Image 1 (cartoon, one colour):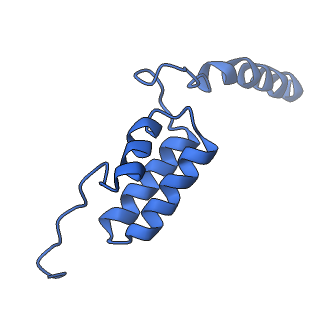
Image 2 (cartoon, one colour; image 1 turned 30 degrees about the vertical axis):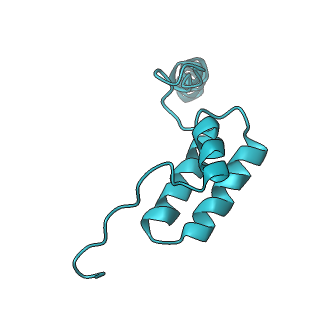
Length: 97
């Protein structure tokens, strides 16, 4: 009886897993997860917001070199060529001034 319940539970878990893990759509509007390139872009923007511009630029260069098809790359390439930030840094708080 117990082995039958365990077997049934394993079967249900095995068959249900593909339904739970199906977030791999290529459409950015439907996608539920960020790609590695998106995570790098977010990291670069975090560096910039914290005032570490060199780390932001290094991260953006890595993004362009290793993930050239990422959706952020066209704007990043333009920024790196012109030297202008792609997104404004957060303004300093009163405690930082």
